[in-house]
Length: 584
Image (tube, rainbow, N blue to C red; front, side):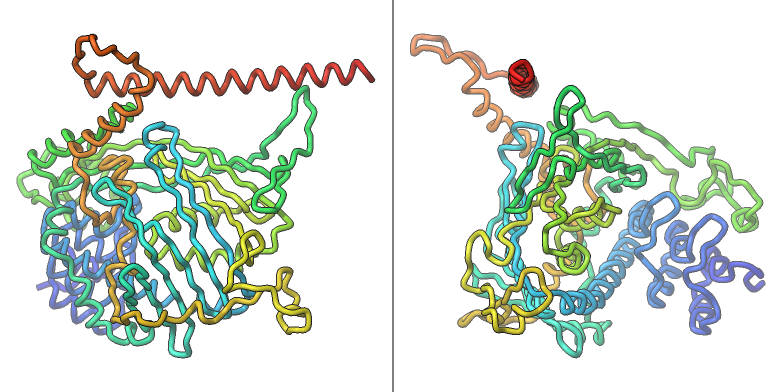
């Protein structure tokens, strides 16, 4: 049997699925396991695309990177799902979660060390979820994240836990991070049940086999992925531009001030971020006809309501040749594949892709204050990075504020989360300046903290980082701090058309959502319809489509009324200015 070719030796072993030779080659440590072939694939990506399970297993045991995305933006797990092989999906998903867990855990001590070097503080982050769709907006909640930081200890309290079965899940939960010499201690405190789940990161990272075993997904989870579309959603910020918001008329520009949490943001310091695009792509080649039919039939009322158009495309559609296989449908030879000068045109390996895509454009708004004493990079970003580990909203915020923002601290930020939902985040009550807290105080003038160079000397009670008396302390519950970056709110708002890859929560069926929306619409339309008298004959309730049409009309009338009020206020201002100029 001939040995591997002179170039891409690991890839050639993968192509032939010679997994024993691949194991030996990896043990020799002479080859780069992350080398890309002429088509941009690593050995693991190639093995998954070809459906060579034995080679995939060998590469994963040797720590091949599961998190890498292809040139087309598809993750290894998504390509595994496209094969339709349950064992492949289970294996890749287990190692994906294991690698993600170890990487996140390893990064926490560094984030805590960053915090240790910054001044102590307390701050509140108010999250308000809004929507331009009236019915959705009525169902959107708000939450306040309370943040204490002392040394390299951090505590974040929240009350909004998630969205499940059409109901907002509320509770009192604290996340406590404490730096230690051997790593860090993470505690999740459930105040309602008086339970504490603890995890020592140093110990966890030294027990890889035990950690890997806990990451094995259930058969139901694997089956759910294989019967659902593959969806990739990401914010494209390459063309983002920041523009100052202007105010005034006749070319005049006034220094209008807007106070946010006690800090003034001038009109010139309010920015709009334009050209923020949400790109959504959906693949269905792995689905059976029944699954595809259910997926299309499960189109949510929101999608019909909003008229969300999709562009459909199909790739790898070349005719299947005699020597083709399900994972090599156009019978590409290894010599053709590994020759960088050979054009494959529309030919490719893997199942022929069936994909729909759409792009939606959004605008974000920033209120900036150059007087705010908090440092975005040193104090706030480490907190956002820590919370983004298990909170999809913080992950979206992190992706946005890592852009090159204009100067100043963002005292208020409004960003798009999904197609119909925005999040408005406001920083307030810095060090208890608005509402005093017993756990935070301003130190005496003679103390070292007060004499420090900190612009806002603040002392935090160390007791807030300790387990309350009477609580039961348990071991790690990895399902929470290390869960996938799913977002149940996303399922409610857009369901399958905008589902992020990696959602693990139970799907809300279109039927249940339609019933809920119908009830909400009926209540909202009750005030706008003429009530019939006691003698009036009972009319049949309007259809769901008719209710949606009426809801849109109501929304349009409300918007028109707001615009009329705005024009009236502008006209009044102009008349006032004209009179004042005449008097001069």
